[in-house]
Image (cartoon, rainbow over all chains, first blue to last red):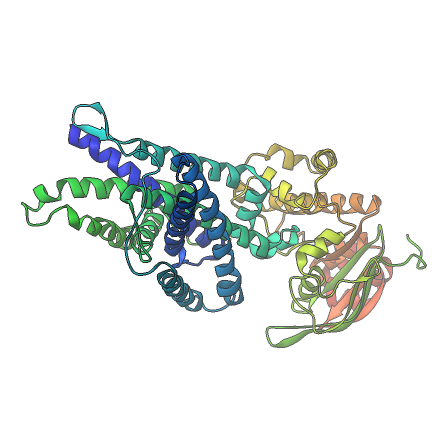
Length: 310
Length: 249
């Protein structure tokens, strides 16, 4: 029972980070029908920019409180990622909007390589230790279950961001414009909506979420690295497909479900395979799910079955 | 009827549009004045819808001038033309099917910040189209065709256009609903809005229009008052067919 609760907790931590990243994939897909494979790199850029900021600040002012360092790191990483996300759309994708679908997809992969290489040039190939800005001292609310303030912080921040995004999309003027543009660019223009502006805003919001996810991810694994965006990016993509690509609640549910499946998988894989595989094989679960969803329910858990209505 | 000396708010000269590799519109002139109901009739493929889409900025033109309130708007994207006061209710209505009726109407008022004015115009739309009010919280995709057309018109009105372009508002609708929609069109022109109407149902369009243009193969071949065109033997044989004989009998 304790192991069970512990796995749920671990699953929610990684799942809520996947969900934040998955939202970026699904928002862009919803509005452009494009899988932005460069999205995972924004997680990496967010983490490394935050790390750079924290390192510089704590070097100059060693007595600064960690909370302040964290806020400063986020305060720099989020705008930087927003700008990068905007530039990716403006330079990479906008001209290809009416091109065959393969062209922007290949561009996305190219942008991904480009960003990784740039990060490697700036921050080198080595693994950087990401400082503990939120305490990781384990607490034991009950026997056999260990939880750290960082884990609680991660879940709370991610859920708050998801709630905020849902409010933005469902209740605000911009959110209405986003949904209108997602359904029909041409008619949105006829309503006075600048579709290019709305699409740019979508990339900017998704990139901001990815930056925050990057900081949370690096904090939880205590590591940052130029290629760290690849795995969470791919898993978040899986989560978005699992939930139903283009569907916002789907991305959140998909992220959390994926986190839980991975966590239980890692916890029980040794028993299940009679010791043949251990928990370092946990990544296989994400991709088994991706395969299964694509075969049996390509529209995902919450996606619409019909491709497009009139 | 408005006199000819009022300057037209929408003025098109020598408009040419190439569409899908063919010259769909081959140089047409037309005007719409404030409060004037003008219709554009003609057979399928005559270039009527292409003309409206070009005026609204959905399709680019390759010749001629589109002047709105004295300004050349030919190069503006559609969202900026709407901001000038030129709105299009597109063919097939273009409702956002996944948004609620209320949200559809709100997107119509997207460019406006005057909350009180929007609320007042919303009430006006409800008076004009009571069915829309009943459906306010319903997802628009679940409405009937007629209701969707009403939402599309209400949505366009919420942008407070000076000129409304209407593409086939009667398409696929029951006669009773068509009648209702034409009443609405008539009442909005009384408030000073200019309307350019593309209609398949030429008889109905000519009856309610002050002026009309007949398009054929990308050109305007006839123009005149609605009444004059209704009586024109060429129009009667080409576009009104049996309908007018039934009425006469």
